[in-house]
Structure formats: structure tokens, C-alpha cells
Amino acid sequence: MRILIKGAGDLATGIAYRLRRCGHDILMTETAVPTTVRRTVAFSRAVYEGRAEVEGIEAVLVHSIGEADKVIASDRVAVIVDPEAAIKDEFAPDAVIDAIIAKKNLGTSINDAGLVIGVGPGFTAGVDCHCVVETKRGHYLGRTIYKGSAIPNTGIPGEIGGYSVERIIRAGADGEFHPVRQIGEKVLEGDVVAESGGVEIKALMPGIIRGMLQEGVQVRAGMKCGDIDARCEVSHCYTISDKARAIGGGVLEAVSRYEERLKGTGIIILAAGEGRRYGSNKLLADIGGRRMFEYCIDAAAGTGQRRTVVTGYDEIAVYAGKRGFDVVRNDRPELGISESIKLGLAAMKDCRAVLFAVCDQPKLTEDTFTRLINAYAAGNKELACMGHGEDMLGNPCLFGRRYFPELEELTGDVGGKRVIMKHREELIVVGASEAELEDIDYKSKS
Image (cartoon, rainbow, N blue to C red):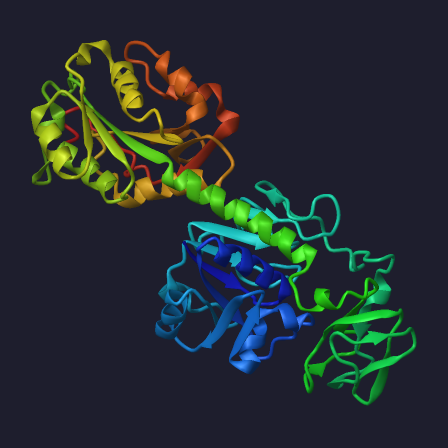
């Protein structure tokens, strides 16, 4: 997957490391003057040095989408100075991860990509992102959240080695920052470790300098400029932290889950109806110069998903076959739509989920199918359908495999809506226009 990560600090780097190790293509955006404290384990360092390596993964500073694609093609991470992530449209990511860690949303939208993940406080799953990953140290660190938000920021650093607020090195005054001690050096409480605006900054505890801003950065009084680790392990200064790994694991879980649900969804087109109310085989009727069924078949084919058509009509079988559909014959349409559902499920029983659509909705588009499948893949529920307003639920409909047995129990002309109404709490409704959902049952509509 192509993944855009907003931010390239140490936590964002832990995320990028996990994803890159699993084969994903990574582009990270940063500010022109990153203020990453744990810069030895952050790809933001590439902004200053042109490149940065963390635990065997190399990041390279780029200046255009062309350069980014070349770096990514060589199995490296691309970093670009782009605080607004304007490159998103050119990069066309499958997923966007906001890992700026600003404790608030600085502009990320749930519509930025198929999957949008907010890291830490400031995001609400289901509102401005699909999933939130917890960043607070403790029992829930790295947890994926699909409804609600992360634990609010308390402003109190998490405890490491028995120290909390003492761990943080803060600027004593506004002005230019100058480190006196370097990352990896051991210090004692009271030692001068840096200065800002001409004011000395002293260590509040003994330990090892694990992070420190680079020379010459402009800071504000009270701003975090470094941190001290009581564990005094030099290797910890140059390797990804336990916190960053846990957060990266949570993001990887969400990405892998999305990818698995997306790839595991098949499409079943039901096209065996007799068209009694229409008065003839409406699926072959001319609508705008094309046979009615062609609209739905072409829309589904455009998604690239695995797909099957259930029909008793040779014309539909031949047309769908040429567009990559498996064809299942239903020569007993008098048994009702439930028979087509069962035949389709039998052919797609190994799918993670299936989307059902009917061929009498000529205004359905590839985008209709894509939006519905993506809403399911990025979400945490097992039913989805298109809808208009609060009460108008329509086709297509999507069912996770846990509902296959209930679909197989349907009889006669009863469709999947019965299952949906029984489990409304598990339903994702994807907005659509009334016209998009219109079906043609009578010749007057055509």
C-alpha cells in the first residue's frame, strides 16, 4: 500500500519502520525546521542532513513526487518538507496516518484516503478518521480505537524508571538553543545540559541524555528540548523506543486489517429476475442506448474486486464473462431472489465479505461500489449498505461472513434486507443520492 505519514518524529518513525518492514511504500511530510527531541531515531533528521538511517531503514529527503517515487522504488522511505501535506493529491495514498502528535487535529479529514488513522489525542474515530491509536503509556498503549478518541493529554509525562516530569529538559527562556551535553552522555542532577536565550538549563535527575534538540533551533520558554533516561542504556538512545514500537504495532494492525478486509471482499451481481412488474425482461431493456444490466456489470468490474454474476440469461452471462466475472447459472428464477443469493454465496464462500447488487439500478457507478467496500474495510462492523437520509436504506448491501448462514436460510422472494434490519447495530450506512439508489421496476421509469 502507498501510505502517507504526516510527521517524521520519533513516534512517526516507529510507525514508518513497522510499515516499511512489512513492504509498504512510505512518504513522510515534515516542517522546514523539525523540533524532534529524539532525533537520533527520527527520520525528520533527513530534513537537516539529507538522509537518516534508523535500525537499518534509510530515509531520504526529496523535493518532488518524482523524487519520492524513485526513493520509494528503492525500498527506502521518502521525506519531504510539506507541513500542509499538499503532496497528498499527487501521491494518491491508500492510507493517511496523522502522526504529528500535536494533541489536536491540524487538518486531517476522514476523506483524505481510503483509510485515515489519527495517532494520539485530538482525533475522533468515525468523525475525522477511521481509527485512532492510543499513545498514552500504560495498559492501553497502542490500542486501536474505532469509536471515540484516545485518552486526553494530561500534560504529565509518562513515568520511566521512577521519574516523570523530571525526565524532561525544558527551555529556560525564549531564544536560540545550544546543547552543552550530547545525546548518549550520562549526567547528574544539577548538571548544566543546555542553554536557551542565554539561560542555563540544568538536569533535574541523574541519567543519560536520550534526546536533545539540535544546535541553533529557536525555542520558547518551557518548550521541551530534551529528555533524560534513568535506565542509562546507551543503546536506547539509538534504537526505536518501546512506546514507538507499540504505537507502530497498533498502526500496522489497523493497516493490515484494512488491507485484509478490502482484498477479502467479493461482489455478487444478482441478475436472474423475471421482471414481472416491468412486463418483460427489464434487464435487457434499452436505457440510454445501453442494455440496463450493462451499467451495473461495468461499475462492478471497474473496482477490480473478485466478482460473480448469478443469472439465467445468456446475454448477461456472455457480457459479464468478458468483464472478468465468474458466471453462476440460475434457471429457476421463480424461486425468488433468495435462490440467487444462495447460489452466489456458494460460489464465493471463501470471501471475507460479499457485496450484493442488482442490475435494475443503472445509476450505480464504480464509485458507489468502491465507497461501500471501503467503508466496510476501514470500519469495525460487519454490515454495510447505501442509504439516503435516515430511513432510506438501499442496494448495494454488504455482509461480513458471520452473516452468511442467515442469508442461506432466506426463502422465496425475501432478500438480505431482513438480515440487515435484524442487526441494525452492526450496520454502516454510506450516503448516496436518491437518484443513485433508484431502481427501475416499471417501464414508465425507463
